[in-house]
Image (tube, rainbow, N blue to C red; front, top):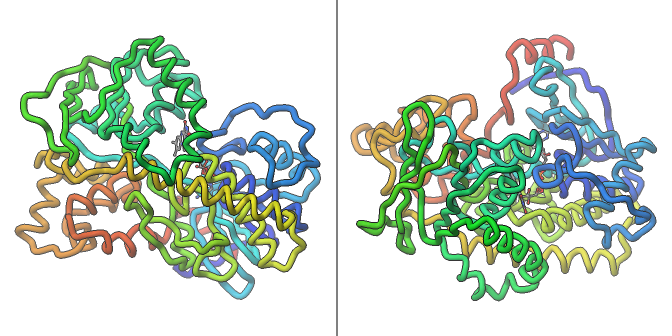
Length: 479
Ligand SMILES: Cc1cc2nc3c(=O)[nH]c(=O)nc-3n(C[C@H](O)[C@H](O)[C@H](O)COP(=O)(O)OP(=O)(O)OC[C@H]3O[C@@H](n4cnc5c(N)ncnc54)[C@H](O)[C@@H]3O)c2cc1C
């Protein structure tokens, strides 16, 4: 896409995303003397986990960065923004990224109320820390009002103090279901059931995750106590196989499933509710790194991630990635990866290290520990193929373009599609507003062509988010 534009700033490092990873990377890079711009589409730093959370008061600003908790990093981040060392651009979305003679060029648009505002920044290096979004698997009724992603339900409650219903069933897989349930209970909803497709006891056999797991024990005990206090049933090896309702969901059909997620005949029953929060793990946001030409890899959960080396450098010189973009590993993994990426980008630019060599060793050790924990989680809470058997022909798979599973099967069986791209062209699945973010991995899986299809797919979208055509035209004229 040949586009030119005005450029409001040229700098050393652009950090994309101000979650735990982006904040940590920006602090370490700025402490090394790099001029840093941080782009984030939220109104406050913190990303999915810390957005809106109050920061603790702390005198830690003189501590060594390797030891800083997120709250302490956030205080340091605010201090560096106030001093001008970090140029923090809240409510701006990076919609495209490219490389030219001036370096990395990141194109920005304003937030939802200011989509026509366009800007661009140029830098010698980039850290991509854009996080992840919920993985959705289609099932009959998932398009009914009242059915939403676990992350969506949590953002509503955390960000706006609104719950999606009085009785919210929470379903899918992974410990995130506990976090969502806890948030909903804290905000006054009841949870008739948590429906977990896997068996968490398997985690006990995962030695790679032991050390990270021990660090999470307190959090888990807190959730367990809360669930017992509110008498929330925690159903293992169960799935929601249908959301039932006319104008909106008023019940869900659940069933016991085997280890491959096939329904055990005769185990179905109905649970009444007025909302369903559902999610099957997360998918890394790789679009911007993909536009810059970074190689991709398949993460431990089978999803597409940015391929990085031990320093978190991508295959493109000067481009680094941290946090969920390199593999979905939780907030602590994101924080320590951010520290490492900040140190690596400063080193790439020839700046003095902000971390001592001992501090860097500690960070590398922590990165390895949290990656081990993430691997253990993915082994314990995988997505099994049996879910495909619960998708009926009339189940919508691409909600934007209203494509059902029958049309996808027809494209393969009758029209001869032999890869996911052909299926997309025949059916328009993935061509709508979300550009395959919601349906892409599910359609890939339903097609059953194997994982290699994914490597070239989502990574090459020319626009990371929708941009008004008028704004693009202005961008062209102002260049
Ligand atoms: C919806 C959701 C809810 C979660 N809730 C929990 C929880 O309750 N408990 C828990 O332990 N873990 C939770 N997680 C996981 C946890 O949030 C992550 O492990 C952690 O936040 C990862 O940090 P990060 O910095 O990699 O990404 P994030 O925290 O996701 O930060 C990425 C930032 O980049 C911004 N961004 C993305 N794309 C662009 C763009 N194109 N332009 C500008 N900005 C952009 C995002 O808005 C975000 O602010 C949740 C994850 C998600 C997706």
